[in-house]
Image (tube, one colour):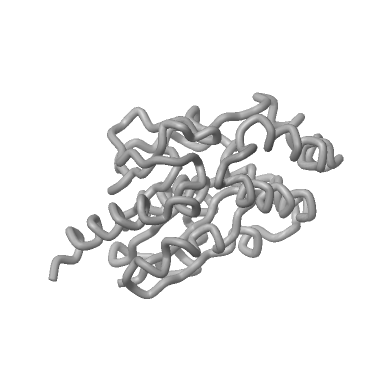
Length: 224
């Protein structure tokens, strides 16, 4: 069984480092930073990206895809092409679930290009508002630091996957949704989900709460 991990916006494969050792199968970690690159991709959206991943990695119904946050959104679109079983962690299928500080995408992109969205000042503000004193503070700050130092066009390309509208796709549902009601980044699904403690980064701060239901699902999928 091949298990494909897709990280979230601004993250990398390290976000799965606390749960992956406890999940069976052949592991493949996708790096969205490398896959999107630093060249502006104005025509990019999550559907186009998902199809490119299916072709590049020969993803089939035999693969299991685990996505965190934006990675779960990507995984859901892959499922439409392949029928692969997917696990969404702190993710969504409704575009209105992620919190968006601004509605105007062009303004968001302009702020990022000019270093006005991710910088040391906004890092302090965002941390104080949601992560001060929490176990996930270090994880959150590492992600913000990565985006401060990262190529701005690459960050915008990632945001295109989240913010660019695509046709509604309701034909399939995630096989397992794992979420916490205290998530400050993505609102809880309207659909039933496996509720865990912590916040958006529970998979890192409370890994046992996340890999437990995943392994139970995998046992149902491939009973011995």
